[in-house]
Length: 191
Image 1: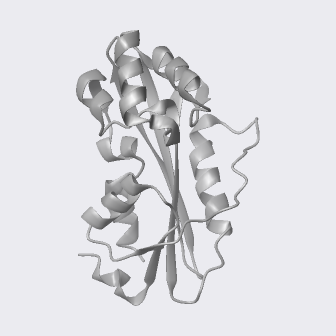
Image 2: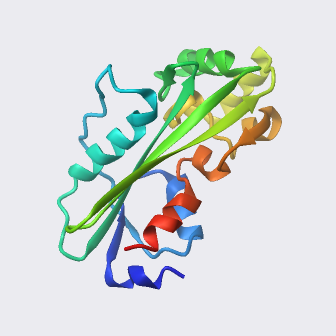
């Protein structure tokens, strides 16, 4: 499938091992070229639903495209109430985030941008994740053993915390991992 992409040098503009795994599982032949030095701040007035697409587009703009390249960039945010939980600044911040998520539902919004020299398309996808009540010992165990400091909201659903702490998901599971594969697949079919 996605034989239409054979005409492109597909580039994943991300160092995320989860995004690499998911794109590989989709059967896409690609190479990784992390886009560095991008200012990932966004306007304070930007609605939370638009933040990940804004960031995915900023990342795409940071990569000078060659004629035959198709670039995929993405960003994911965790939103509790209307507050964006980014990557934690350290273990204490990770604990604070997980304590806030405990026993509550939150949104995970991923934005994806697919770019060629002739075309740019982007979209967002939202999933609702429900956390069980977590004890401080469970939170500390997770932080100590899984080091989720590189993850929005301080957790990876595919890790231990997802196994013991997630009571339900509404929406795309893979979106919560950082790449809404179903929507991306549908978009890639059009290139």
